Image 1 (tube, helix red, strand yellow):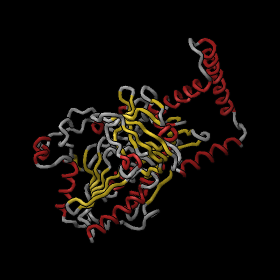
Image 2 (cartoon, helix red, strand yellow):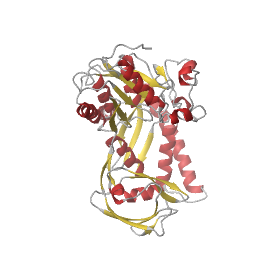
Image 3 (spheres, helix red, strand yellow):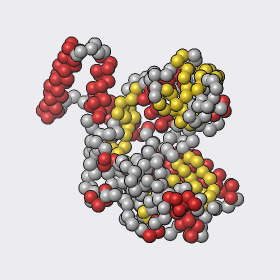
Image 4 (tube, one colour):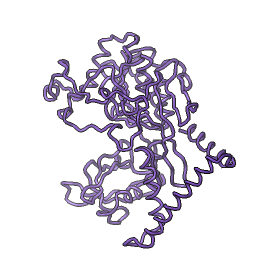
Length: 443
C-alpha cells in the first residue's frame, strides 16, 4: 500500500501550490465554503441546544465518520484502538498476550489463545472469562478498554484473574507481553498434495507463501502432485502481498491493474517483479474460494484464473473490486480511503460480481450450506457500482443441482470428510497425477 499512499500525498502537496486558475475552480470552492457554513451552523446548534453537553471531539469524529459512510462501505476513519487494529491487519504483529476475545453478558470471554504465545503457554483456555486486569474489576466495562489494557510494550507484565467454568475458584495468571506475530500462511502435505492456507494478506504473506512451498518440497523430498491454495474466508489485506503471492505461481504477465478517478490514472503490476519464474514449476494448482474470499484474495484468484495457471474451485467470491489507501492523520489515526478500482489481467472488474469459479463445488459438508445467509459486496449499502454492468445472472444464487454433490453432510461425516471442498480439490489434483498444468477453460 506504500506506493498508492505516496502518490496520493504527492498529489495533495502539489495541489496546495497551484493557484486557482479558472472560474470553474473558484465556483467549486465557493460552493464548498457555502456547505461548510451550513455544517458549522448545525455544529453550533448542537453544541448550544442538545439535551446533554457534548464535546467538540465527539461531534467532529461523528461528522467525519458520517462523511465517509456516505461514500462507500470501505472508506473509514480509524483512531485509538481502531487504528491499532488497522496496523495489526497490515503489519501482522502487535505487542500483547495472544488472545482472541469477545464480550458475553458484560464479561470478557476468551475465544481462543494463539499458539505459542504468553496466553497459550500460561494455560489460558477457550471459554475462560477474564474478570480482573491488574486487580481491577472489568466486568461490565468496555471490551475495547480491556483489549487496550492487555496490549502493550513487549517485556511488560500484566496480571489476569480468570473464572473457568467448572473450576472451584478464580485462577490467577501473571503474563509478560511479547510481540505476537500472526501467521498469515499455514501449510501441510495432504495425500501427496501441498496444501497452502492463506488467511490474510499482511506484510509477511508473500514471503511466507514462498516458505510454504519450500517446506512442502523439503518434507516430501521432492515436488508434490500439485498445490491447493485455500483463500476461503480470506477478507484481503495489502495489495502488494496479493501481487507477491500471485507472482509465486506466475512466470510472466500482468497480475492486476488499478485505475483511479481519471481515465489515464492506471497502474499495472506484473509477474517476476518479486519472484523469478513459477516456483510451483507448472504443477497443478487449485484455488479454493467462497463468499468470504474478498479483495486481495480475489486479485490472486483472478490472476491465476485469467492466465489459466490455476483452476478456481468453490462458490462465487465476495466481489470487492476497490483499493483503499491508508493516509496517516496524526500520531494514532488514519484515513482509509477508496482511491481506485482494480481489474484482473483480462480487464475484468470483480466489483459486485466477484470471481466466478471454473468448477462450482458447494460446501455440502456444511449441513446448513443451502440455508445459511450469504452477504457479498453487492448487498452492502452504498457499494460502488460495477461500470461493466454485470449481468444479473452473475449475481444469482450459486446453488445448483448436481448429481456429484448429492451426498448429505451426515453421509460425508461417516466417511471422515468434514471439508468437502478441500476433499474434492485434493481428489482432482490426485487424478491429474502431478502432471504439469495445462490451460483450463477460461471465462
